[in-house]
Amino acid sequence: MADITEQQILGALKTVMDPARGGDLVALGMVNGIAIRDGNVHFAIEVDAGRGPQLEPLRRAAEQAVERLPGILSVTAVLTAARKSPPAAAPRPAAHAHGKPAEAPLLPSVKAIVAIASGKGGVGKSTTATNLAVALGLQGLAVGLLDADIYGPSQPRLLGISGRPESAGGDRIRPMEAHGIKTMSIGFLMPEDTPTIWRGPMVMGALRQLMGNVEWGPLDIMLVDMPPGTGDAQLTMAQSVPLAGAVIVSTPQDIALIDARKGLNMFRKVDVPVLGIIENMSYFACPHCGGRTDIFGHGGARDEAQQLGVDFLGEIPLHLRIRETSDAGTPIVISEPGSDHAASYRAIASAIWAKLGQKQRTAPRIVVE
Image (cartoon, rainbow, N blue to C red):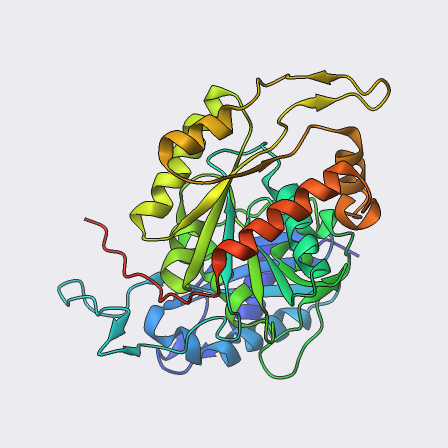
């Protein structure tokens, strides 16, 4: 059978009408970011921000239209708000006016949402987030782990989960579960080797759907595995949900600490408390002789935390077993609970939970000047 083409996808989407605008999705220029891989199709539908909450039936109709094509294995469509609803001259309303939210809040049943962030990639942030989430679950807490790295999702592999989420009825899906925690990632909806070639607004729309269209249920805490840097995903999280705090993950060397400082200051600018800094890959622990080598230096994150006036939450070594258990989808906290490394993750998780104190915040209003 011939491969599915973009033209076939667009032909199917021409049958889907936007009744409010009086045209089909293609003619109205609403379809973007089409990706096709081995019968799996992904695309975005750009809509006015004000209409987003009412357009789930349109999104589903688009998926169904493409699903009817021969050779299709799966279809994932996301709504994105790339166009502004009000005219350019109209003032932008506050996110919360007169104490009443403009729209239904995201994640209303989550008591505390904590971002696990880094200024740059390659510092082991996702592995850290996974082990901290599992460690919190082992304390008897109801835990969620949101993979907010749309371009490079890691949680399906780190948690050893495959397959697609199931529908919870209507327009919502059930989160995947592993090792006692609930999780959701764009990686569950796309083949592992398929790149996400989306613009910023499309990423922001997808992230909001991973929060709002998932049946998370009541949670004591949700950790958000953030993408590296200080971009769209970070601003989307800060604007969309009341982050209880952020944890910065860094390695000890100067170049990583420079970027970690940027990430920390970004959260401060959007009024998100920084709970502390973790030094990952703090030293190399030889699995054979037990010797220790400070490959990236040592103590840089502790010194940085002191200079910036935030807590130093702990250090995690660069160790073979942490890497092996992560690759296998069996986090070391649960696969080797008696190890020193597991104990370090548990201690940091306990410190984060203690610092939260269940104090609730409202999402800040961010004005870009």
